Length: 478
Image 1 (cartoon, rainbow, N blue to C red):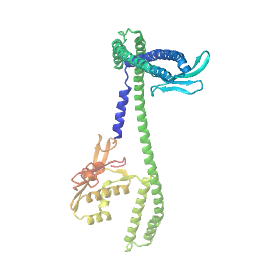
Image 2: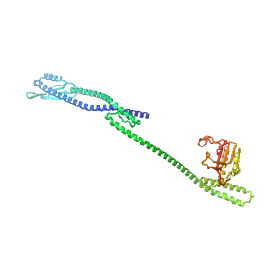
Image 3: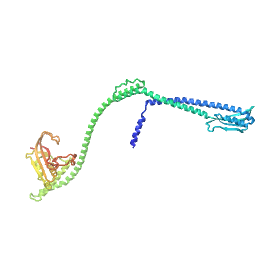
Image 4: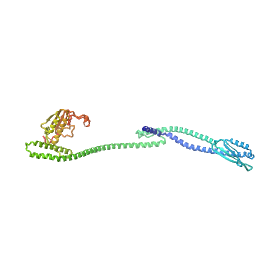
């Protein structure tokens, strides 16, 4: 509702905000005429009012003098009947409203009033004398009604003439202004429209009126300024686009740097935590590894306890390798790299207790091993490589529902062109480790990024697909 009222208000504002030039000029002319004609008519009205009032006062003086003359004899003779006739005769006049006749002692001899609705009063008092002796007094009251009626008629006539003249002048002026202004204004408007559409070279040559040539000249100057500014703005816009592109690139570099910094800070925090935990675990494991070694020195080779002590030592060494993994994660460990045979690492894993436990947990899994006999040596950490093989096989086995096959293979390969999914790979000899399974894979809704992983991609995703790892051959390998 409030929005509708607001829209209605804006429409009314636009409607009343539109004004007509011819109408405004006509109204201005009418206002000027009202001022001039009003002053003139007010002068005429005032002058006529004074003239009528002077005429009434002159009549009042004449009536008073005449009354004093005709009352001399009746007052001297105390003829009341004649005095009444004279008083009533004077009341017949349309300007006399009251007659009051008194003797010299102030006794009322005659008093009568005419109309009761008299508009304004004018009075005259006169002494009645006989042979230079005052014998009585007479008072006359004159009504201004007739004057007011004449003035009202004059006022109404003046107003009617004023209104009619204003209407005639308004209509005539508006028509004339429209006739004489429409064409030049249309020419000016068309020229402005052409300039607004981009025709900055338009010269307004059709305008010949002195009042509009100045406006046209100013519009041409503005068009020239606008054209220059548009050219300047285009240049500035191109410069801004180039600057925005540079800034976006700089912001992208900054964003990537900040992201790397956050990751580095996160890894630093993880490394600090892992380093502290690894330090404490090393203190605990030092005894677990050193004491079995001392015990083995004292045990005979055929001692039944020797296998148990060896198992304790081996577990301690595995725990120490886990600590080493934590230090590697924290980037504080010492990287171990030596020339190893990947086939030996796979064979050792297949003989390890971890693999025996895997077979017990997944009895329906069949393992197929295909190792290349003359496999080249690679440089790496035996412990980490062994864990890599263990994790790949374990994940592949877990991808199998009840039964299936997990295949492990190794081979030599010469790489001379890029391979999809790997970073820059230099040309040369490599060792390939492949772990595949016949599992069901991961559904799209459960996978990262809602994209279905291919089975057998190295995480036990199954269905005969393979996970391959490339290992650069050591210079000291075969």
